[in-house]
Length: 510
Image (cartoon, helix red, strand yellow):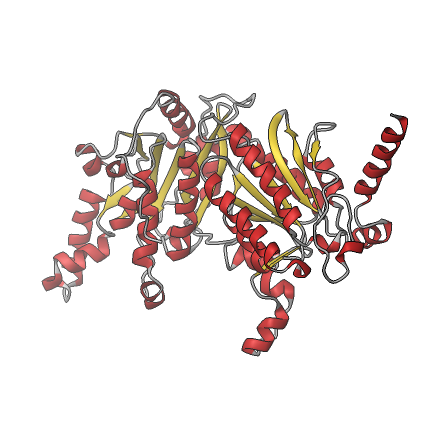
């Protein structure tokens, strides 16, 4: 017995050492934590239960029989974050560059299967050089097994990927199928083909950071949802983010203690909208003033800045927020903002997270670039997502709601539950100037008549009352009362039941 216990401790010590002290030191010199150190920060103290610590690979080619390290380059198991269960895997770059073998993949698949069976999220800490070349097709098969589980778990449990080092080739597709991706600035990157291959094939010279670094993926490609300065900050932000999410698609989001009055009045909001209808303002101010303790976790902050997306809490409960941002492109919808918002709406709907929409949209962005890029189809994604969503939906129109963009932004016609408008709201087919130039084309040469026609149009349509008369707006509310009205609306919708027609799945325009 004593001999077995001694062996156990020796084996555990060997597994915890990963690729050895020398490689751990290299990891630290790069400003990166080890796989196990990362889990210590991510999870509650003493909550981690490890699986398959002693698993090793089964490859005997290319001298691999002499390179067997317990754990095989990935630490897997479960633990808790603020007391709530989560399954985790953390790739160990000190062990053969964190490369994925058949055994490595089986460990990840095991915890993913358990996560689905037990209704708990999965967080993957990715730090891998890709497929283990020595294993050939067995490694590729391992990736495919992981991809399959990502697909089947989608919409069932939240899946979060944290890129904390290299992620290249086939390795990028698993994070791409998860719900959210977070990266570490200057130490993580993602790409299908690396700089050397790009140079060989296309003659383009590009660095790994330019090709697939955090800045690229948070500002240009939209692959990543956020990036942070180092491993520690990233993992602490993931903990914060995790608290907004439900454990699965049949459980409610956690209700946190709150210390903010649901009836709080914000007098400053009465002056948020400028007198000049063409002057921008910061919609983020409204979001923060409506939320508990002004706490807003923004998603894809640096991509498609003309629309805001993220999570807040109202009365301690998680709410997903979508809002046009007048500071950028006047809040117009375009290809990127439509894709960004549509995916976020679908996530919220999949996990029963109510949706709050703030609208100030003059329309879709015009131009050949948008039309050639397929703005019709991409704009339809957002329209589709809102129409399909069965969760509670509350909409507040603050200023402009013009044309088809009015319809798209969670209008009453897309099964919006509560649709409010501020007194400054303008709900119309288009702005007064454009409308008058079409309706009164014959008078275009007479500026005085055009001014008169414009004044008549503004008096009739530059307000929320025409829509309210038709029942498309439930109430015109004072800006200062927005938090109270929104809070009461969501409270009344807690027992909402709405089901879509039975079908295998929809065919959203991808």
